[in-house]
Length: 474
Image (cartoon, rainbow, N blue to C red; front, side, top):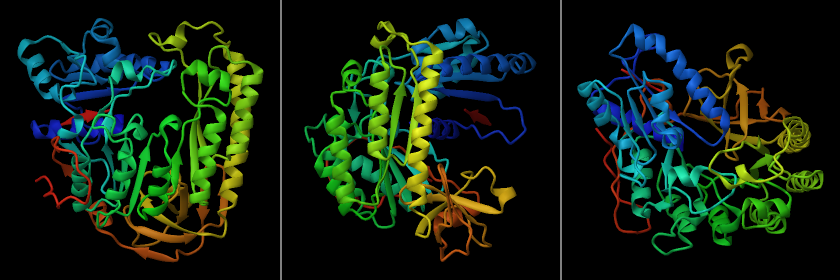
């Protein structure tokens, strides 16, 4: 979501007359789009802002702006700790950035503007996309859940849903620009439709997006087990464009802790969902989020998490050590665990999940996979003479570099080796399909989509939408 917000910021700044600063050049503007989910985000921001001070001193006309969740949380504290910051804006008014920058220049003083509710739905703003072949599409912002460890609802606000027609029009606009893959974004995609009274809206949205000609892959994140319904499983299984990949946050395998977290489901329900998904899509790759060291977690609680992880056979997991966030109920709970206890449990969890990941990946050896070739996915591609991309189930695949293959093209190749976090296909590729996305990547072109305004709810394939005709964002 933050990456997509940064695309919106880049699009707005381009419309305001800014151009990206060339590599190695000193920018006139640096924008930090921040996260507040974990404590190290705070430390990283203020440390990085400290590095900006000498640059600002050397060039007083350079502007520094801070936005996003941490700005929403810390507000004027940012300017107090880093007086060289020119603009602070929050999650609800990213569209105000160009105006605030101009005001800061005119008044020669910092501008801090934090709104308590959404000013403009982000997707009504223009976006300079990062990729020619894969795009983010928000279907909602905010969250109505009250998980005790999470600060997001207080910073992003209550859930606001986009109308289906607007979502589909944005997807169509991306496909018209050559994009092959979209990821639908929401804090809780399964509660999509709450604003217009249709609890089956998300499954319908998946089916409708799957009707758009030229859209080859649909992904989504993140679902919530408490709202996950069978119609979504059916939509995934019956819509060819929807990838058989599911990211289903677990957080804990202890029912007692799930209650303390206010997660509104228990492990039996969670594992039951996975059973249904695998019955409908035996090839589905299921990933998850897990928190280790939640306040009051006992060894028995942690063993429950290990048991569920073994039974669930996750393809991979995002594992986190509990991070105390001021303002959340969990921050005030008794039983805050010592760092060394959390670290030891975290290490054990990683070991179990690595076994799962390796076993799941080894089952892919000898299979042919379809790979959407990506740029920057393989950090060692140059020295290994390989290229990289994602299979339809989301697994990372490194394959033998082949002349003529570009990021954005699609190749079929056979897996020859498996590691816990990736697959290798070192034989000759089976097939190579050149795509418009590959043409655009080769030419250095990225889509620029105009904002899609809100409208009445509707489903179905939309009419084609005409594509929309120095700063550094981090």
